[in-house]
Length: 270
Image 1 (cartoon, rainbow, N blue to C red):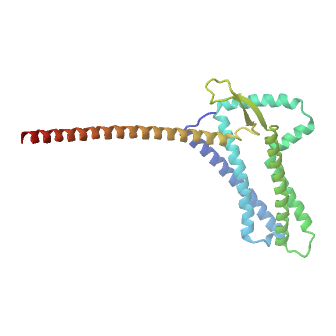
Image 2 (cartoon, rainbow, N blue to C red):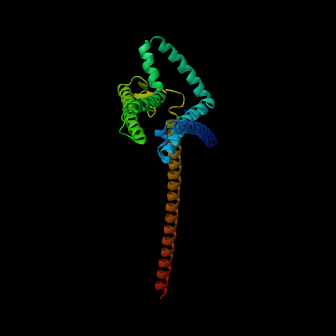
Image 3 (cartoon, rainbow, N blue to C red):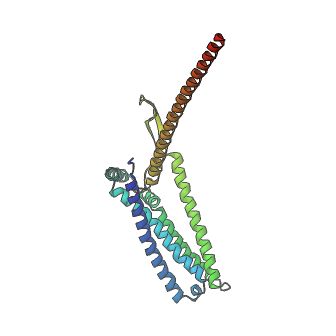
C-alpha cells in the first residue's frame, strides 16, 4: 500500500472535487432539461409544485456528482500509482483466464454484480415509468397524486433490489467466494515469520474501489505514530522531572544535615 503525502492527498482531493463538480453540473443540466421539457409537454407534470420539481433537478445532479467523483478518484489513483497500474494489468490477465472457463450465465451474473449501481439506477427509471403507466389509469387522482404514488412504488421496488444486492454481497463475504476470498498469509506480528493466519480479502470491482480503506489505514498509522511520539516525550519529561525532584531532595537533605551539624557544634561550645 502506498502512503500518500500531504501534497498527494490534496491533489487527489482536488481531482475528486473537480470530477464531482463537473458531473454535478452535467447531471443538473440534464435534469433541468428533462423537467422543463416535461413541464411544457404534460399538464399533470406542470401542476407539480416548484419545490418538488427543483428536488427532481437537484437529485439528478447529486446522483451524477457522486458517481463522477468516485470515478475521478479512482482514475487519479490509477494514473499516479505505477504499482497499482501493474496490479490492474495482472488482475486483468487473471480475469481473462478466469472468465475463459465461465459459462454465459456466470459471466452475466458477474457483470451484473460489477455494474450494480448503474443497473439500480436503470431499474429505478424503468420502475418509475412502469409505476406511472399503472397509476395513470386511475382517473380519480390528480397529476401530482399520480406522480407521488408512482415515485413511492418505484422507490419501494428499487429499495427491494438494493437490499437483494446487499444480501448477495453479504452472502459472498460470509462464504468467502465471489469478490471475497479467504487466504492464508504470514502473521505480521510473528517475529519468526512462521505462523500463518487467515485473512479475508476483497477483489475490487474497479480500480480504486477500496482506496478509502487504504487512506483510513494510512491515517490511523500516522495517528498511532504521533501518539507513540507524544508518549515518548511525556515519559522523557517525566523522568527529567523525577531527576530534578531527586536532586532537590538531596540538596535540601544536605542543607538540613549541615544546619544540624552547625547547631550541634554551637551546643558543644556552650
